[in-house]
Image (cartoon, rainbow, N blue to C red):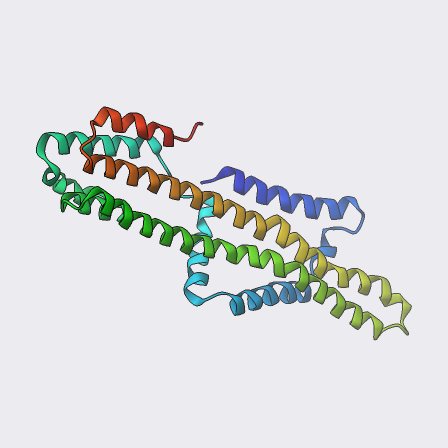
Length: 248
């Protein structure tokens, strides 16, 4: 669980509602079902028009990464590659076949299978590079869904504010309703700008960082598998892959 994401979300809510209370308008002033429907439904409608179905579904599945990102244990990855290098040195590439069943990640398993099959190092690198680009492009497109929502939400907030002001203009004959009506109209703007800058855009940035980390881990695996195919010494492979470690 990513505690920073949870803390950031809670702090954002506290900042908005606490700020509204300190300004004297009160937290209740931010509650507007009509504004919420306009901003949320409008933003979702816009992103649905923009986004292909598979990309949108992928974006929904990736939301959990904001609060529970995939765990990347660099030491375990390096140790696995070095273990395979030692095993291949002792028993040959076919000796790696029993290890295939224990590999969960499809990308790694495909690379290890090519290694067992005796595919040339250059071909292994080429095939895995193509798959890496495809996976990275797919996930980056999904992350851009939230970037798009961060772009559309403020505009929908303005639309909601204008619609609210239109309703206020219809009640100009009743001055007692003008103040509350104008305040309610601008709640939609708060929703749009707040959701964009406190939720959607930070989510997109967090997902992009996670995607970059996954791509780096896959690059590590490509380098390791190709080095094994080239017959490099396990110690040399270990030293090379140490450069991929994330400093904590």
